[in-house]
Length: 342
Ligand SMILES: [Zn+2]
Image (cartoon, rainbow, N blue to C red):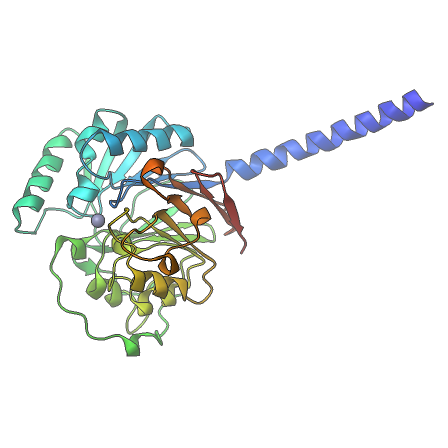
């Protein structure tokens, strides 16, 4: 009898195990992955869809270091090529890494905001290098409201080359109560202000990446009416700079998680950090580096920082999102992860 009972329980266990397998597979299959790669104060963000299509937003600085880190993230995500590389703007910490990247991994199409309009030697040189590097690749210039055809998610351009959307996104457009306390920002015609800013929507999950969009253009997107709506995940614009992350922008987005792609001594401004930290509904701020020029009160706890000292360079922050809006953030340095519900 004991043998029969054992066999029956064993069969029951097997049955339960088989039931669990498809659930686990289904969960991992429908995940969107986002890697915030450490390029020491530039940007490089790798997005991989549940169907293994990929988009890289910016390529970091010139040199092997950042290209190697991007390739490492691509391997971790299980992809051998990058389908789209989107360049937000033509400063060296965003476009500089394109030439080295192309030596290390296959790329499909380049996406950007069009001709460089900044009359500075450095930017003209970065742009010329970029154009030469991608001469034999398909190139698409995007304007506000346009997007990139990725299956299963929507990428919509909100700002490009100094222009921005003028109609609110579906469900957005409410008057923004935080605009009244913002001062009139100075005119900005820098290349930062021409950044390609995008909203990525995956089911109920919304991720906002504005590149290095600066105060004036950032405010135009949310004042007097918030044209964007909410964002579950917000990559702090301009590496967490101030005044480029004004209250009327950050608080109106109601982000649950903010990632700051700062370097050890770039971005991660204490005033911007405080605005982000105090944002209604905010649960956590994750940083790519401990901001050495700030202080302990204006840095997150070490668990939420990918690189805390000179010995820990190159760790990334990873986000895995489900289409129901839930997502998980992992620190590749210590494996610490947090789950965010809907
Ligand atoms: Zn930058």
